[in-house]
Image (tube, rainbow, N blue to C red; front, side, top):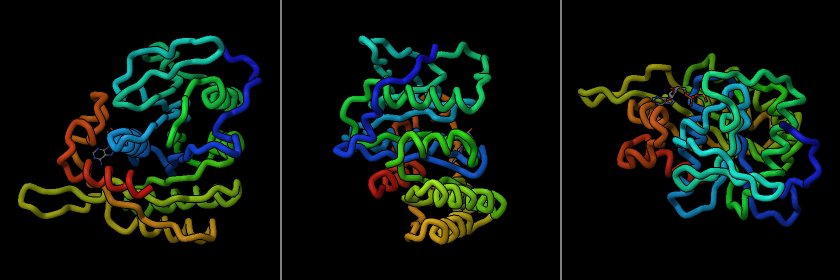
Length: 263
Ligand code: ADP
């Protein structure tokens, strides 16, 4: 049950030292959630206090990616977020029976995100990452309104069609006056057994999106890194063990850890 919000959102306190980073993408399936989970786990490995707020209400996936089966516990009026791999996680998936959809429109999603931000005992975090739904819909606007200090991180594939839709996130960032910290290009190549690289989805998408974003938000937007296609990354997401934890020596894991440090 959602109740009317009364508590202030601690991350909006002018003295708050928490970085708030919303991870966005133009469309689904580009690896936005995988990147969010791995960056959070990578930051926790580096000793940072990290929280993940799953704002992808219809497409929630953070419980699965962190292997969390616990539910939040209640302490007074606050919910204590369960932890996975050293990361505090809050997701609507913790309240929904398996196989059940969240059949909500925008205003109810807005209130859910508001409560996840205000009625959860996050403690003192260094970083709060939000996994946004793909695209430029209601929730992205709600997050900008509810967490005005949030910066945006954009995930795209190298494919030109994906890059074109990811650019639209730049015009949203411009409209809601959000800074864009950078672009992560995912699924950039696949290492073949003969040592060569196969560019399954073409090339250049990350660079293209970063340049288009910079035009919108009028500050430089870097390509923070490129992550290869890797079966171990997919397996890690499916088994609740992000690849930075399950296979730290892989190129994908090392690149994700480097990006997490660069943020
Ligand atoms: P999104 O959040 O953008 O919808 P997901 O993170 O859910 O995307 O990723 C979509 C699918 O692709 C998942 O099954 C995920 O495990 C897989 N995936 C994402 N990135 C990679 C990668 N670099 N290599 C292999 N599989 C990946």
